[in-house]
Amino acid sequence: NSSAHDKNNPYAKGAGKTTCCGSISGKTAEVIWTLDITHEQYLKGMRLEKRQVVMPLPERKWGENDLHVHFLPGDKVLLGWSDNAWSPYEKRTDTLGKSAKQEQK
Image 1 (tube, rainbow, N blue to C red):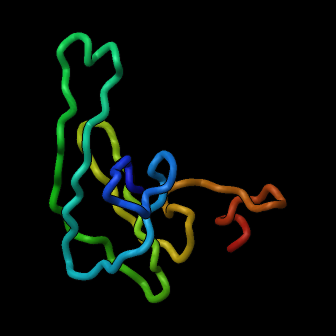
Image 2: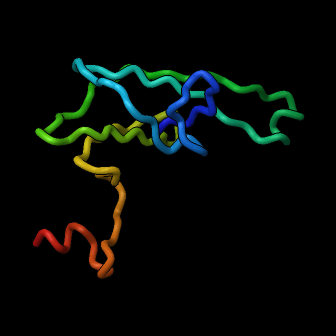
Image 3: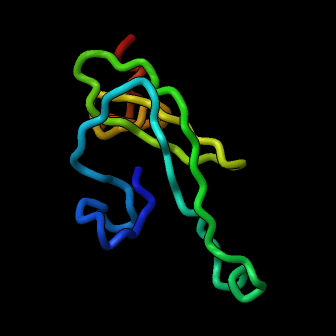
């Protein structure tokens, strides 16, 4: 999840939901993001702030090539690998309406 509307990042899509392509290696990730504000907050004097965290990369299984980055309240970041575009932390349904986890049972 790339939340940047960065003109220097030609791979950011629309609202910054996907970034492709890159190589990720090592045992840690440095995640840097900009805290967004509303127009009303700006008028009250608040300004954009950069945040960053260095954290361990989660365990990666063979075939898991998609790294999902979730930004949570309190400047918390959640990382997770998957073998497709679906986050391992989000529920989803297939075309039949069954959740993916139900199908695996």
